[in-house]
Image (tube, rainbow, N blue to C red; front, side, top):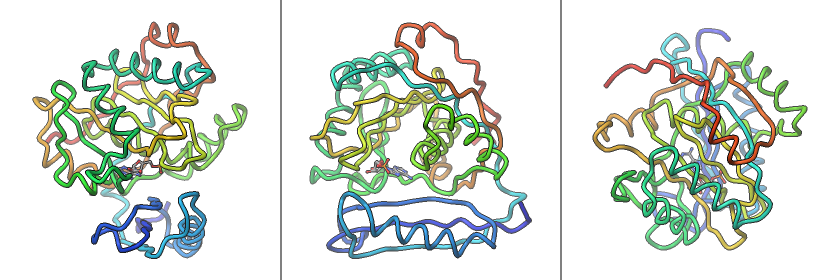
Length: 286
Ligand code: AMP
């Protein structure tokens, strides 16, 4: 990749712009070379206009030049799929995975309630994620209508190729899987204890739990058709400086340069027994 690269970001809303409370329809984040900017903008435009939540009225695409040498290079979380045959089993798996990652039981229930009801105060989906204290369940994001949007992350071309090579035999070489893994890897790298995610796309029912301890665990059927969807990032308040943590999530550019293990379906018991081989890469301390 050449010296100058570009962060290309898209967000689309309906009714009014996001800033005025419009409904979030879709968003995307890439870091690309200058030759790829135009095609990336085209792809994002077509993605914004073809979302299952409907056509947006406002599409915002921003392009920002980044200095390649200043971008942190990190490793992806290891990826695995847990065996679940229906929504009940999926919820059970999510609860067990989050408990094993250090999140309190009642806090997990509150997070699942938010994903079902829609985490914004109006009961709608948000553009960003909820930040929640893993001990008390207190919401910590400064704006609960918007949430915190993780931005400026992607793969190096070599890492993207390697990930495709590993995902392809599992039938998972899809932009959704790759983008979610990039986001989750940055989120854990930034100091998050664990995350739960359900798409806001009504047709996409696979969700995930990721954590420092267990890596990235895809969970089939996690999203019930009635769920609004969203993301919750759990943190240990005593471990993070919230302002710096949020700045890292939103602003610090990160490229995933190394791919970790990619595995197929495992049952919950063996997955919990396995010790995660992934070690968290160094992060500039705050
Ligand atoms: P998606 O996986 O794109 O269907 O997104 C599901 C939900 O995750 C959205 O409704 C947002 O609340 C949240 N979300 C999506 N992208 C981001 C992001 N870049 N940072 C934080 N939260 C996000």
